[in-house]
Amino acid sequence: MDYRRLGSSGLQVSELSLGSWVTYHNQVGTAAAKEMLAAAMDSGINFFDNAEVYAKGQSEIVMGEAFKALGWPRLNYIVSTKFFWGLDRDGNAVNRKDTLNRKYLMQAIDGSLSRMGLDFIDLVFCHRPDPHTPIEETVWAMSDIIASGKALYWGTSEWAAADIRAAWEIAERHHLRKPVMEQPQYHLFHRSRVEDEYARLYEDIGLGLTTWSPLASGLLTGKYRSGVPAGSRGALESMGFLTKSLTDAAKNAALTRLEPIAADLGATLAQLAIAWVAKNPRVSTVITGASTLAQLKSNLGAVALLPALTPEVMARIDEVTSSLAE
Image 1 (cartoon, rainbow, N blue to C red):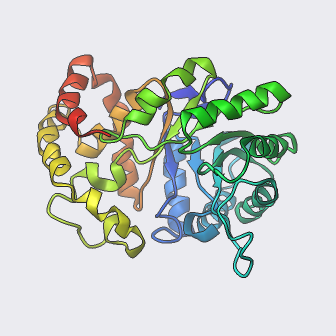
Image 2: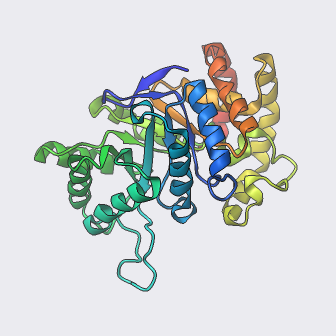
């Protein structure tokens, strides 16, 4: 496992990391989380991603309980959370709205710290843009959270490049803590934001990336070519919105053309897809997910594949997938 700087910061994150969306609490309890976190750490992973909204706060609780049981020195691991949708707003129509306003953010950090049982969180993200709150208000609140010591770095997730630049320039103008990282979706079929829209930001402001969904929610494993199998992520009632993309005929057909490329490298489709994301030097870390220890160990095989992704192999992959990418 290699380590990469998180954007222009001095923080070193493992090139693969482990996330908790969908899995923690819904499919993975504290005991299984502990086992997988331990295996991830043993493999060199040092970054673990979460969000306030995952399983309505329960994902943070599961991860926090696992951290406590493992008893790792706090210096040895990096943990994140994300704010936007919020919790505990029932009965108050005004505060039920998705937001990044100061009141919500200053309370959200305390809630996450309590659920995770931590004194501070390393990375905090604004989980989505908020068109109803001035960016300046959000920047001041996030900077104040960093200044308070409750978090160490802040960034955005799925923000437009223009809004990220605006936030950075506000922070620069007022001598506030600047956004360091962005967490966008990035995989073989979803490329334009990372490769085109953000292109100027990497050099201009030193933007780092903690990308999510390298397997396109499981599509790139090949398991959905004959429909949605029982027990898969796509079969979960809460994930019904993914069914159309997971069963996309053209993309599933492309996987059949990718398989020989993976086979030539002694890899699975999933390992090839994860390694392809990690091959991008702009990516600080690729957030992977797993509901079983076997899945985790298989995903980790992508690390060994990286040296084999020569320009010729990357060109073969691009020939199959680029026309289907957004």
